[in-house]
Image (cartoon, rainbow, N blue to C red; front, side, top):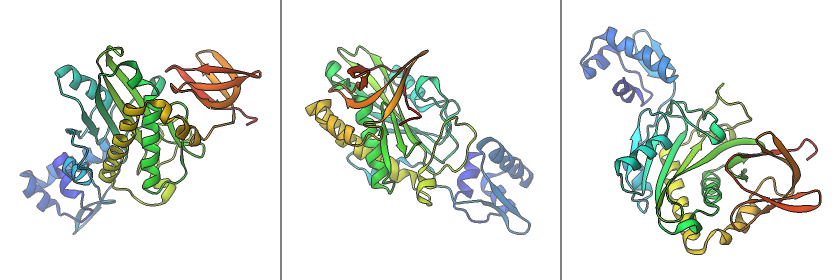
Length: 319
């Protein structure tokens, strides 16, 4: 089925007979595969009598060679899947199999994409970026301090460089444009964080998606913000270069060297917020973050610090 998709991805008309010859199947079998493509992947294919079949829009698939050509310094292996449960889950399985880090897992779609706090991550075929970079960490806990915030900075900068100037940060792991989410980060750890461990840097970016009913919060995409279609291979290459840059700074100088830059790009700096921790709600004003990436809030006139993976930050109605 995906072989058929690769024949159609140029956006030109292809006759059923020509497709059948290329695939070694009958025209009726071609028709059935086209129906499967539309149903399973949500793709739109035009059918015109006398001309054949045409993708509603040209499709660019992820290409490791293209990515490496654009970012030669990012010389880690790239594993690309047509469809997978989630890139983070596959990254964790690859670690168990003994795959040497660093390596990158990408997929055209996810069937069980995950966000923070167990949320579903909308993952339509060949529209967005589903990205998991695996690193081996040997420097102990210091190398993990504020790491998800560092990744957020790299994602934000990659988006800005590609024409999304309004991209900014929301503590702890979101990239927004205005009040709408455009990207999210999910880090997962395997091993002993005090000694040697592996960390999976999971990144989801809404790139060319224009509609979905799978998201229960305000969202946007690069295409919706700019009005143009983006080359996802170029974005993956740019993100790799930005991650290299920020991770190197973090490794050499620690998170405290990046703290001020993060705060300058925090869209909710100085805003009145509610911090949700399970069934508890804490109201306060965002002061910034500390040298380890924890959130600093002014609560009833007193500064308090919060950190943890199950915390959620929301703007208050009066902010």
